[in-house]
Image (cartoon, rainbow, N blue to C red; front, top):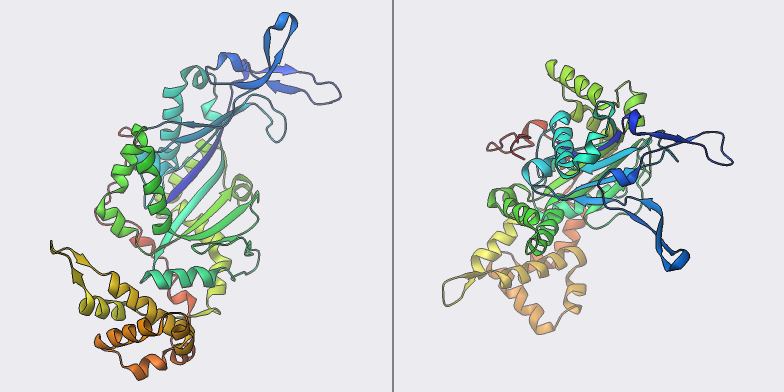
Length: 410
C-alpha cells in the first residue's frame, strides 16, 4: 500500500522574482506571499507613529481540511536552503484521503497525487493557479505491508525481538517502544524503516477522531469509517512494516522522482505484472528479513488456555451480559507463572488470592504440578525462528470486500 506521499510543487517561472542578497554570490528566488490567499505569520513591530508593522512574513505548516483526514502543506516562498526554487510541500496518506483509513488501500501514485492536488486547488485556488504542477517532484513515499500474528502476546514478543535486529546497512535506531521498532537514522535522506502493531495505533487514532469529531465534520466522518466492525476485526494483530524511500534513494536506482515520470514508470511496471510500491518495500526490508533466519523467540500459544478459562469462569450480570474479567485475571496469573515462576508469582500477591487463582485455573483443566513447572518448561521449549511469524503475504493485504477508492468520490 502507498501509505504516505510527500510532494514538492514549484511555482511557475512567471510568478518568481529574482533578488540579490548581500554577501551571497547566488541570487534568491521569491514569490509574493500576499497574492496567494494563504494565512501568514510574521514578526510584529511598532513603527513610526505607533503603527503596527509585520516583517518576515511566512506561511507555516497548515493542516488543510479534507473530506476525511487533514492534508499537511506549506508554502516555501524563497529558494533558500535545499530548495532551488520556491514551491509548496504537500504531505498526506492517500489511503486516508481517499477512503478514511489506511488499514489497507491502493498502491497507485497517480490517484494519490490527484486527490492531494484536488484538495489544495479547491481550498486555495489563487495559490494553485500559480503552481507548475507538471514539474512536481516526489520527495518521499511510504510503502507499507502487513504480517498477521496469532495473538496479542505474540505480537508484543515479535516487536520486542525486532528491537535487537540489525543487518548490513539496516541498523536498529534504538529509540524503540513496546509496540514499535525503528531502523535507520531519523533524518535519513535515503530511507527509513519501522515496524509497529497496527491495532494499537488504530485504536488510538479512533479515540482521537471521536473526540475531535464533536466539532470537526471531517474527523466525525473518519471516525464513522473506522468504527466499521469489519475494519476493527481486520486490523487485529497486524504487524505493519513501513518503508520510507526518499527521492535520492529512487534516483540512485534509476527510478525517476519527477511525479509525471514516476507515474509513467509505475504504470509501465504494472503492464509487466510488477508493483513499484512492493518492489521498493522489498528492497528496503531485504537486510532485515535476511537477519530473521538467525533470530529465535519463544512461541507463546496461550489462546487455548485463555479460551478454557473464559469458558469455565465466564460470569453474567442480571441482564445476561457476559463479563470475562475474572477469567482474564486468572489468565494474568497464569502468564505470571509462565514468565516469573511459582515462588515469585506467589510473593507478588496476597497468599489467599494466589491459591484461589490456582484452584480456579485448575478447574479449567490444568494441574497444579504443571503450573509449578510452567516457568521451567517455558524456558526450554517452544523456541522457533522469528521468520515463522513475520511472513508477508502480498496477495492477502486486503479483504475480499475491498473496493478500490476513486478520486472523484473523495
